[in-house]
Image 1 (cartoon, helix red, strand yellow):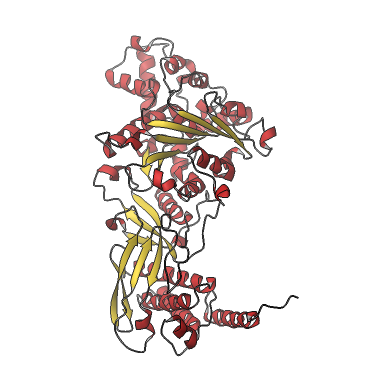
Image 2 (cartoon, rainbow, N blue to C red; image 1 turned 180 degrees about the vertical axis):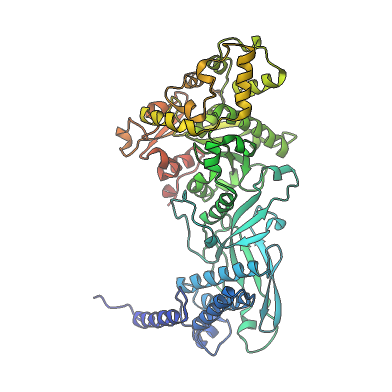
Length: 577
């Protein structure tokens, strides 16, 4: 065995002793056993005992009290964090001390929120060595306003999002938490923010160590800082240290998804009983509107919801320069209803959000939308940038629209769905595994079975029945049952050839990303096992990129995400490195 470097034996022995001490006191993390001399050398005061066991004792007592429902647990967790901060300051290169500090601070904030000691907008109240202390909170780097910080959530309280396939976490200093904002519904942009918005934050406690570690003296002048980990890369801590900030981008998405799940499974309900969910079809902003930044709108696929884009969202937000130019929004819609209707809803939503956020039309960014549509979402995006003419109507009906005997309300409903022009707001579309000619034959055959699960919206059924009653034979037999989105995407659908032939707006830039299943892209002619390459192909696309992925994995495939980054004008992370 190679000899240890000079001093390594003593370091290893000390770490083993510390590990044993931590195990004895119930801590998961390990840390350096800081002596009085090392603390003094670091300028953090002195103590009559090692800091790490002191951290562990305080944390263990905090856990005991928290289980009993006693609010004094907050004080013990806080003391544990203070002494862990001293360990980090004295040994800034110790990942063990850093992780222990992070975990103790998460415990403290969780308990503080539960027991009413934490007001995420203002301060944390603790009982320190010299009485009650109100620790002020500073927020750094956020696009959210101070009043948006309603409550802190421990991400460990939510199960992981099943669509989170990449870890995306960057180790560093600070407690990775989620902040929940309850929508006050004041109008304006609140109409497009979630009922409960959740965003990431990294907390850093800066204790006044001189006050804490001295036998007696003044009250500590501590400060609790909340950082936006997407916009602040590192944070000064200690005399001469600026460690990277702890980043856990999956945390907020997992918490937000759990809130949605507790209200009901939107994705499944939106497929099987879409009428119940039509009123919830809308654009949702991930963050508050930021004038001057172009929207990237993510549109999910069949039996899905926007949480599907976990990995892509995390990757884009962490792409250097992305947040300076773009803001990410999502379109949530019930996937069982025919996509002609959900495309019409999206057209109206794009105009509504643009008029609300920019009523004077002064922001050029709101005329520069990029749509990223996965599978069925791609077909909805397709209908935002196409001229319908009479082609879609002619695929549905046997006689000219103008000759129908219908009332004005029915006429408007039909026109909204079947007659449209390209949105002047959209300037780029990225098709992600989009079946322009329908799904593969096996997938289309399966759709015959699943289509019967979908309950057609009553208002659409009544509309077709009324048109057919007053205009016998006007509706083609295929459409009298009101095709679901599953029917419309099957290879046998007569609607797809009509949509395939619609002309695109020549001002719109089109890109295609398609999967080749388990095969190398050079040999993947069968596509992603659901969408053949021929169905995903678009003649008008300025680029077509093939990735080795099946249909249900392409939206989180690293190669596909890298291609989206490239299309948006950024080098993928592996090229930057």
